[in-house]
Amino acid sequence: MSRAAICLLLALPFAVALAAPQEPPRPGSQAVQKCTKCRSQGRMPCPEHEPDECQAETLVQYCSMVDGCKTCAGVGWIDCAACSDDAVEKDLAARRGEFARGRERLAPYEQVMGRELRMVEDANFVVIWELDELKVGKQRLGAHALAHLYLARMQAIRRSYMDALKANPADFKVKNLMMFWGLATDHHRAAAKWCEMTGDGSMKLMGAVANFTVCAARKYFPDDRGLHRHVAHNLSHLLLSHQAPSNWLGRVGAGWADEGLAHWIEDRALQECGTYCYEEVNTAEQPKPGPWRPAWRKAVAKGDVPGLPSLLSLNTDQLSAAQHTAAFSFVDYLLQLDGAKVDALFKLLRQRKPSRDALIEIYKKSPLELQSDWHAWVLATYPTVK
Ligand SMILES: [Zn+2]
Ligand SMILES: [Zn+2]
Ligand SMILES: [Zn+2]
Ligand SMILES: [Zn+2]
Image (cartoon, rainbow, N blue to C red; front, side, top):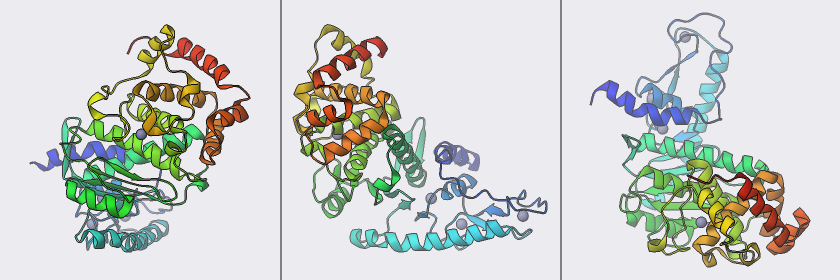
Protein backbone atom coordinates (compact mmCIF):
# COMPACT_ATOMS: atom_id res chain seq x y z
CA MET A 1 0.00 0.00 0.00
CA SER A 2 1.32 3.42 -0.87
CA ARG A 3 2.17 5.89 1.85
CA ALA A 4 -0.55 8.23 0.57
CA ALA A 5 -3.11 5.46 0.85
CA ILE A 6 -2.04 4.70 4.41
CA CYS A 7 -2.39 8.39 5.30
CA LEU A 8 -5.88 8.36 3.82
CA LEU A 9 -6.69 5.27 5.83
CA LEU A 10 -5.64 6.97 9.02
CA ALA A 11 -7.23 10.32 8.25
CA LEU A 12 -10.80 9.46 9.20
CA PRO A 13 -10.47 8.11 12.76
CA PHE A 14 -7.80 10.52 13.83
CA ALA A 15 -9.90 13.40 12.53
CA VAL A 16 -12.67 12.14 14.83
CA ALA A 17 -10.22 11.88 17.69
CA LEU A 18 -9.17 15.46 17.13
CA ALA A 19 -12.71 16.66 17.71
CA ALA A 20 -12.50 15.56 21.38
CA PRO A 21 -12.45 18.46 23.84
CA GLN A 22 -9.31 17.66 25.83
CA GLU A 23 -7.24 20.23 24.03
CA PRO A 24 -3.57 20.08 25.03
CA PRO A 25 -1.80 23.35 25.82
CA ARG A 26 -1.49 25.19 22.54
CA PRO A 27 2.09 24.90 21.32
CA GLY A 28 3.89 27.97 20.16
CA SER A 29 1.98 30.26 22.49
CA GLN A 30 5.20 31.67 23.88
CA ALA A 31 7.26 31.45 20.73
CA VAL A 32 9.17 34.68 20.34
CA GLN A 33 11.14 33.86 17.25
CA LYS A 34 9.90 32.71 13.86
CA CYS A 35 11.01 29.13 13.27
CA THR A 36 10.55 27.70 9.79
CA LYS A 37 11.52 24.20 10.92
CA CYS A 38 8.53 23.73 13.26
CA ARG A 39 6.37 26.59 11.95
CA SER A 40 6.89 28.27 15.33
CA GLN A 41 5.18 25.41 17.17
CA GLY A 42 8.24 24.66 19.31
CA ARG A 43 7.70 20.94 18.71
CA MET A 44 7.57 18.53 15.80
CA PRO A 45 5.68 15.31 15.23
CA CYS A 46 7.91 12.30 15.96
CA PRO A 47 9.24 11.06 12.59
CA GLU A 48 8.72 7.44 13.67
CA HIS A 49 4.91 7.75 13.33
CA GLU A 50 2.35 9.13 10.89
CA PRO A 51 1.61 12.82 11.59
CA ASP A 52 -2.07 12.01 12.26
CA GLU A 53 -1.06 9.42 14.82
CA CYS A 54 1.02 12.04 16.62
CA GLN A 55 -2.02 14.32 16.81
CA ALA A 56 -4.08 11.50 18.33
CA GLU A 57 -1.44 10.88 21.00
CA THR A 58 -1.88 14.42 22.32
CA LEU A 59 -5.36 13.40 23.53
CA VAL A 60 -4.28 10.43 25.66
CA GLN A 61 -2.21 9.89 28.77
CA TYR A 62 -0.79 6.57 27.61
CA CYS A 63 -0.82 4.45 24.45
CA SER A 64 0.96 1.11 24.37
CA MET A 65 1.07 1.22 20.57
CA VAL A 66 3.62 4.04 20.54
CA ASP A 67 5.31 2.91 23.76
CA GLY A 68 8.93 1.98 23.24
CA CYS A 69 9.64 4.73 20.71
CA LYS A 70 13.15 5.88 21.56
CA THR A 71 12.73 9.14 19.67
CA CYS A 72 9.69 10.58 21.48
CA ALA A 73 9.36 8.31 24.57
CA GLY A 74 5.80 7.58 23.49
CA VAL A 75 4.32 11.07 23.51
CA GLY A 76 4.36 11.39 19.72
CA TRP A 77 6.16 14.78 19.69
CA ILE A 78 9.72 15.96 20.02
CA ASP A 79 11.20 19.29 20.98
CA CYS A 80 12.25 21.43 18.00
CA ALA A 81 16.03 21.71 18.06
CA ALA A 82 16.03 24.91 16.01
CA CYS A 83 14.13 27.09 18.50
CA SER A 84 13.19 27.15 22.14
CA ASP A 85 9.77 27.49 23.73
CA ASP A 86 9.66 27.01 27.52
CA ALA A 87 5.95 26.24 27.71
CA VAL A 88 6.20 23.56 25.03
CA GLU A 89 9.32 22.00 26.57
CA LYS A 90 7.66 21.86 29.99
CA ASP A 91 4.56 20.31 28.47
CA LEU A 92 6.60 17.64 26.66
CA ALA A 93 8.44 16.78 29.88
CA ALA A 94 5.15 16.56 31.79
CA ARG A 95 3.70 14.33 29.10
CA ARG A 96 6.72 12.01 29.20
CA GLY A 97 6.22 11.68 32.98
CA GLU A 98 2.47 11.03 32.56
CA PHE A 99 3.20 8.45 29.88
CA ALA A 100 5.63 6.57 32.14
CA ARG A 101 3.11 6.60 35.01
CA GLY A 102 0.44 5.31 32.61
CA ARG A 103 2.65 2.36 31.70
CA GLU A 104 2.97 1.51 35.42
CA ARG A 105 -0.79 1.84 36.01
CA LEU A 106 -1.67 -0.43 33.12
CA ALA A 107 1.00 -3.10 33.64
CA PRO A 108 -1.25 -5.26 35.87
CA TYR A 109 -3.63 -5.90 32.95
CA GLU A 110 -0.81 -7.44 30.95
CA GLN A 111 0.28 -9.48 33.96
CA VAL A 112 -3.22 -10.99 34.29
CA MET A 113 -3.53 -11.77 30.56
CA GLY A 114 0.06 -13.01 30.40
CA ARG A 115 1.06 -11.04 27.32
CA GLU A 116 1.43 -7.59 25.85
CA LEU A 117 -1.86 -5.81 25.21
CA ARG A 118 -2.88 -2.87 23.06
CA MET A 119 -3.98 -0.28 25.60
CA VAL A 120 -4.89 3.41 25.57
CA GLU A 121 -5.73 5.52 28.60
CA ASP A 122 -7.09 9.01 29.06
CA ALA A 123 -8.72 10.92 31.93
CA ASN A 124 -11.90 8.80 31.92
CA PHE A 125 -11.17 5.49 30.24
CA VAL A 126 -8.74 2.61 30.13
CA VAL A 127 -9.21 0.87 26.79
CA ILE A 128 -7.86 -2.58 26.00
CA TRP A 129 -8.16 -3.05 22.24
CA GLU A 130 -7.40 -6.54 20.95
CA LEU A 131 -9.51 -6.50 17.80
CA ASP A 132 -7.10 -6.54 14.85
CA GLU A 133 -9.23 -4.74 12.27
CA LEU A 134 -12.70 -3.53 11.42
CA LYS A 135 -14.30 -1.84 8.44
CA VAL A 136 -15.42 1.67 9.35
CA GLY A 137 -17.47 3.19 6.57
CA LYS A 138 -15.57 2.16 3.46
CA GLN A 139 -12.19 1.92 5.17
CA ARG A 140 -10.61 -1.06 6.86
CA LEU A 141 -8.85 0.22 9.98
CA GLY A 142 -6.11 -1.40 12.02
CA ALA A 143 -6.01 -1.80 15.79
CA HIS A 144 -4.19 1.44 16.61
CA ALA A 145 -6.57 3.66 14.67
CA LEU A 146 -9.57 1.74 16.03
CA ALA A 147 -8.45 2.08 19.65
CA HIS A 148 -8.19 5.87 19.29
CA LEU A 149 -11.43 6.07 17.29
CA TYR A 150 -13.43 4.14 19.90
CA LEU A 151 -11.86 6.15 22.72
CA ALA A 152 -12.94 9.36 20.96
CA ARG A 153 -16.43 7.91 20.49
CA MET A 154 -16.64 6.93 24.16
CA GLN A 155 -15.65 10.46 25.12
CA ALA A 156 -18.45 11.77 22.86
CA ILE A 157 -20.94 9.35 24.46
CA ARG A 158 -19.80 10.41 27.92
CA ARG A 159 -20.26 14.06 26.97
CA SER A 160 -23.81 13.32 25.74
CA TYR A 161 -24.53 11.71 29.10
CA MET A 162 -23.03 14.55 31.16
CA ASP A 163 -24.75 17.24 29.08
CA ALA A 164 -28.15 15.52 29.03
CA LEU A 165 -28.27 15.10 32.82
CA LYS A 166 -26.25 18.21 33.69
CA ALA A 167 -24.29 15.69 35.75
CA ASN A 168 -21.63 16.75 38.24
CA PRO A 169 -18.18 15.40 37.25
CA ALA A 170 -17.41 14.96 40.97
CA ASP A 171 -20.03 12.16 41.05
CA PHE A 172 -17.63 9.96 39.02
CA LYS A 173 -14.72 8.48 40.94
CA VAL A 174 -13.05 5.84 38.77
CA LYS A 175 -12.13 5.33 35.15
CA ASN A 176 -14.18 2.85 33.14
CA LEU A 177 -12.21 -0.17 31.96
CA MET A 178 -13.46 -0.90 28.41
CA MET A 179 -12.21 -4.12 26.80
CA PHE A 180 -12.59 -5.22 23.18
CA TRP A 181 -11.35 -8.70 22.30
CA GLY A 182 -10.96 -10.61 19.06
CA LEU A 183 -11.02 -14.00 20.79
CA ALA A 184 -13.88 -15.31 22.92
CA THR A 185 -11.42 -17.07 25.25
CA ASP A 186 -9.76 -13.73 26.11
CA HIS A 187 -13.18 -12.15 26.65
CA HIS A 188 -14.22 -14.96 29.02
CA ARG A 189 -11.04 -14.59 31.02
CA ALA A 190 -11.33 -10.81 31.24
CA ALA A 191 -15.04 -11.03 32.14
CA ALA A 192 -14.30 -13.41 35.02
CA LYS A 193 -11.46 -11.24 36.30
CA TRP A 194 -12.82 -7.69 35.85
CA CYS A 195 -16.60 -8.08 35.52
CA GLU A 196 -17.10 -10.93 38.01
CA MET A 197 -19.17 -13.01 35.58
CA THR A 198 -18.73 -14.80 32.32
CA GLY A 199 -20.56 -15.65 29.09
CA ASP A 200 -20.35 -15.07 25.34
CA GLY A 201 -22.28 -11.79 25.33
CA SER A 202 -20.77 -8.52 26.49
CA MET A 203 -20.37 -8.30 30.27
CA LYS A 204 -20.59 -5.37 32.65
CA LEU A 205 -19.56 -4.79 36.19
CA MET A 206 -21.79 -2.01 37.48
CA GLY A 207 -21.70 0.31 40.45
CA ALA A 208 -18.72 1.75 42.33
CA VAL A 209 -16.39 0.03 39.83
CA ALA A 210 -17.85 0.00 36.33
CA ASN A 211 -16.16 -2.17 33.67
CA PHE A 212 -17.15 -3.57 30.29
CA THR A 213 -15.84 -6.39 28.14
CA VAL A 214 -16.96 -7.65 24.74
CA CYS A 215 -15.81 -10.14 22.15
CA ALA A 216 -16.09 -7.92 19.08
CA ALA A 217 -15.32 -10.66 16.53
CA ARG A 218 -17.30 -10.57 13.29
CA LYS A 219 -19.45 -13.47 14.45
CA TYR A 220 -20.98 -11.19 17.11
CA PHE A 221 -20.56 -7.78 15.50
CA PRO A 222 -20.56 -7.91 11.71
CA ASP A 223 -20.15 -4.15 11.41
CA ASP A 224 -18.77 -1.07 13.08
CA ARG A 225 -22.18 0.55 13.44
CA GLY A 226 -23.56 -2.29 15.54
CA LEU A 227 -20.51 -2.28 17.79
CA HIS A 228 -20.63 1.51 18.15
CA ARG A 229 -24.31 1.34 19.13
CA HIS A 230 -23.63 -1.48 21.57
CA VAL A 231 -20.90 0.58 23.24
CA ALA A 232 -23.14 3.67 23.45
CA HIS A 233 -25.91 1.65 25.10
CA ASN A 234 -23.67 -0.14 27.57
CA LEU A 235 -21.56 2.87 28.49
CA SER A 236 -24.79 4.60 29.52
CA HIS A 237 -25.46 1.68 31.91
CA LEU A 238 -21.93 1.93 33.31
CA LEU A 239 -22.09 5.68 33.88
CA LEU A 240 -25.58 5.64 35.41
CA SER A 241 -24.76 2.79 37.79
CA HIS A 242 -21.45 4.34 38.80
CA GLN A 243 -22.54 7.96 39.29
CA ALA A 244 -22.82 8.72 43.02
CA PRO A 245 -24.77 7.38 44.79
CA SER A 246 -23.74 4.19 42.93
CA ASN A 247 -26.41 1.56 42.32
CA TRP A 248 -27.68 -0.43 39.35
CA LEU A 249 -31.25 0.67 38.63
CA GLY A 250 -31.92 -2.41 36.51
CA ARG A 251 -32.29 -4.61 39.56
CA VAL A 252 -34.00 -2.23 42.01
CA GLY A 253 -37.26 -1.93 40.09
CA ALA A 254 -36.26 1.01 37.88
CA GLY A 255 -35.32 -0.84 34.69
CA TRP A 256 -37.31 1.76 32.73
CA ALA A 257 -34.85 4.50 33.73
CA ASP A 258 -31.76 2.40 33.06
CA GLU A 259 -32.96 1.14 29.67
CA GLY A 260 -34.71 4.37 28.68
CA LEU A 261 -31.53 6.38 29.11
CA ALA A 262 -29.33 3.73 27.42
CA HIS A 263 -31.61 3.77 24.36
CA TRP A 264 -31.67 7.58 24.40
CA ILE A 265 -27.85 7.64 24.38
CA GLU A 266 -27.81 5.16 21.46
CA ASP A 267 -30.20 7.42 19.60
CA ARG A 268 -28.05 10.47 20.37
CA ALA A 269 -24.92 8.72 19.02
CA LEU A 270 -26.40 6.99 15.95
CA GLN A 271 -29.95 8.29 15.45
CA GLU A 272 -31.28 4.77 15.96
CA CYS A 273 -31.99 2.33 18.78
CA GLY A 274 -31.94 -1.44 18.87
CA THR A 275 -29.37 -2.67 21.37
CA TYR A 276 -30.79 -4.98 23.96
CA CYS A 277 -28.45 -6.27 26.60
CA TYR A 278 -28.21 -9.95 25.72
CA GLU A 279 -29.99 -11.27 28.76
CA GLU A 280 -32.86 -8.81 28.45
CA VAL A 281 -34.70 -9.85 25.34
CA ASN A 282 -34.34 -13.06 23.34
CA THR A 283 -31.95 -12.21 20.50
CA ALA A 284 -34.07 -13.97 17.88
CA GLU A 285 -37.03 -11.72 18.69
CA GLN A 286 -35.09 -8.47 18.65
CA PRO A 287 -36.51 -5.89 16.26
CA LYS A 288 -34.06 -4.44 13.72
CA PRO A 289 -32.33 -1.23 14.80
CA GLY A 290 -33.86 1.99 13.55
CA PRO A 291 -35.30 5.32 14.67
CA TRP A 292 -37.97 4.60 17.27
CA ARG A 293 -39.90 7.87 17.36
CA PRO A 294 -42.17 7.48 14.25
CA ALA A 295 -43.43 4.00 15.20
CA TRP A 296 -43.94 5.07 18.80
CA ARG A 297 -45.93 8.11 17.71
CA LYS A 298 -48.17 5.88 15.59
CA ALA A 299 -48.72 3.51 18.52
CA VAL A 300 -49.54 6.41 20.88
CA ALA A 301 -52.03 7.81 18.34
CA LYS A 302 -53.73 4.40 18.22
CA GLY A 303 -53.69 4.11 22.01
CA ASP A 304 -51.81 0.84 21.60
CA VAL A 305 -48.99 1.36 24.13
CA PRO A 306 -48.06 -0.03 27.53
CA GLY A 307 -49.14 2.32 30.33
CA LEU A 308 -46.55 4.23 32.33
CA PRO A 309 -47.71 2.90 35.74
CA SER A 310 -47.10 -0.68 34.54
CA LEU A 311 -43.44 0.16 33.78
CA LEU A 312 -42.52 1.72 37.04
CA SER A 313 -41.59 -1.22 39.22
CA LEU A 314 -40.03 -3.62 36.71
CA ASN A 315 -36.42 -4.72 36.61
CA THR A 316 -34.54 -4.53 33.30
CA ASP A 317 -35.01 -8.23 32.55
CA GLN A 318 -38.79 -7.90 32.97
CA LEU A 319 -39.29 -5.25 30.26
CA SER A 320 -40.95 -6.28 26.99
CA ALA A 321 -39.74 -4.87 23.66
CA ALA A 322 -42.66 -2.38 23.66
CA GLN A 323 -41.76 -1.33 27.21
CA HIS A 324 -38.18 -0.67 26.07
CA THR A 325 -39.56 1.78 23.48
CA ALA A 326 -41.89 3.32 26.05
CA ALA A 327 -38.96 3.79 28.44
CA PHE A 328 -36.91 5.44 25.70
CA SER A 329 -39.68 7.87 24.83
CA PHE A 330 -40.51 8.69 28.45
CA VAL A 331 -36.85 9.48 29.19
CA ASP A 332 -36.78 11.51 25.94
CA TYR A 333 -39.76 13.51 27.26
CA LEU A 334 -38.28 14.08 30.72
CA LEU A 335 -34.87 15.12 29.37
CA GLN A 336 -36.30 17.84 27.12
CA LEU A 337 -38.23 19.21 30.12
CA ASP A 338 -35.13 19.59 32.30
CA GLY A 339 -31.99 17.43 32.38
CA ALA A 340 -31.05 18.46 35.92
CA LYS A 341 -34.44 17.24 37.19
CA VAL A 342 -33.83 13.85 35.57
CA ASP A 343 -30.43 13.74 37.28
CA ALA A 344 -32.13 14.41 40.64
CA LEU A 345 -34.83 11.82 39.84
CA PHE A 346 -32.29 9.13 38.97
CA LYS A 347 -30.38 9.87 42.18
CA LEU A 348 -33.55 9.21 44.19
CA LEU A 349 -34.04 5.97 42.25
CA ARG A 350 -30.46 4.86 42.99
CA GLN A 351 -31.26 5.50 46.68
CA ARG A 352 -34.05 2.95 46.15
CA LYS A 353 -36.98 5.34 46.28
CA PRO A 354 -39.82 3.70 44.31
CA SER A 355 -40.23 5.28 40.83
CA ARG A 356 -43.80 6.44 41.51
CA ASP A 357 -42.82 8.32 44.69
CA ALA A 358 -39.69 9.78 43.09
CA LEU A 359 -41.67 11.08 40.07
CA ILE A 360 -44.24 12.72 42.37
CA GLU A 361 -41.48 14.29 44.46
CA ILE A 362 -39.68 15.80 41.46
CA TYR A 363 -42.57 16.63 39.10
CA LYS A 364 -45.46 17.12 41.60
CA LYS A 365 -47.62 15.03 39.27
CA SER A 366 -49.02 11.49 39.40
CA PRO A 367 -47.74 8.94 36.84
CA LEU A 368 -51.07 9.16 34.98
CA GLU A 369 -50.86 12.96 34.74
CA LEU A 370 -47.26 12.68 33.53
CA GLN A 371 -48.30 10.05 31.01
CA SER A 372 -50.95 12.29 29.53
CA ASP A 373 -48.50 15.23 29.20
CA TRP A 374 -45.87 12.92 27.72
CA HIS A 375 -48.23 11.40 25.14
CA ALA A 376 -49.47 14.86 24.11
CA TRP A 377 -45.85 15.93 23.61
CA VAL A 378 -45.13 12.81 21.53
CA LEU A 379 -48.11 13.53 19.23
CA ALA A 380 -47.11 17.18 18.90
CA THR A 381 -43.39 16.70 18.23
CA TYR A 382 -42.45 13.20 16.96
CA PRO A 383 -42.11 12.76 13.19
CA THR A 384 -44.68 10.59 11.43
CA VAL A 385 -42.20 9.09 8.98
CA LYS A 386 -38.61 7.90 9.30
ZN1 LIG B 1 11.25 25.38 15.91
ZN1 LIG C 1 -1.78 5.61 20.05
ZN1 LIG D 1 7.97 8.38 18.45
ZN1 LIG E 1 -29.44 -2.36 28.33
